[in-house]
Image (cartoon, protein in one colour):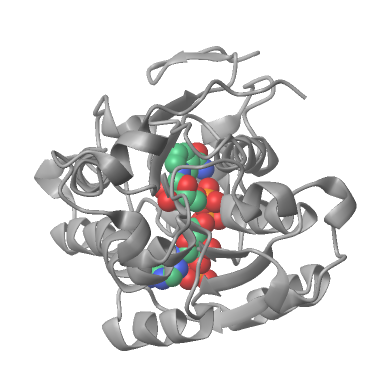
Length: 299
Ligand SMILES: NC(=O)c1ccc[n+]([C@@H]2O[C@H](COP(=O)([O-])OP(=O)(O)OC[C@H]3O[C@@H](n4cnc5c(N)ncnc54)[C@H](OP(=O)(O)O)[C@@H]3O)[C@@H](O)[C@H]2O)c1
């Protein structure tokens, strides 16, 4: 296996008075930027399913009841993570938890008490948090949209990520962990009828960037994956309030839109980089989508 170059932070962080804080002694780490961390070792394929749950690295995935969240939970479990699955629909979580030996937690991530319960279940150390809960509601022009939907989208995409991150940060810090945010290319380029969703995703992106600055100097990775068109079962169905024909039209004729598994694969790659490597922002689209508005369709 290729050797990684020495990490310049490894000596400066603990010795440089300019940094001001000795994180190693503060948090009891022997070498906070050293490599590899136990998480990296325990994701080796031969350790799959080998260790009892409590000895496996812990991943918390929000919005794990469907789509990208469920696929990410499966992918991380295959690598050896003990996955805590959070969402509101507990029946779906139970089925996935049985499949991957995970822990289902009924959690509306906009509710402080339920998020506190999630943090309690997650325990003292969390190696990976995937802030995936979210989604779009409606696509009407501003002139006639129901503005309550804007508020709901802000809650669903921004406040879920903010609340869960805040609640789990002490446990992530203890593990020198990784925080993943599933934002969207919608954050970069608004489209007609997208003001509520694009604005919420842009706000979530701002949260990612501020947090990374705030945590600078600590060995915590803050990564953002920004998908384009992903054909999941529920994203468009939820957006169009259960109108299947309208949801299907979003993907009609598009050769090979991304799948939930494609995004899960990318997230898994991001969190399994060597611990000194932070994938700040990964934009990922299907080949058929050259830009938000430029989607090739076969007629
Ligand atoms: N599909 C795409 O094209 C696409 C593109 C870019 C970004 N994204 C983003 O990727 C993420 C996943 O999307 P997806 O395509 O997998 O759609 P999805 O299947 O609809 O997943 C959304 C998930 O969020 C959960 N959720 C919603 N509100 C919640 C809340 N208050 N508390 C806890 N969980 C909540 C839902 O679970 P419950 O209903 O059970 O709570 C569900 O599991 C979203 O953040 C979405 O904005 C999707």
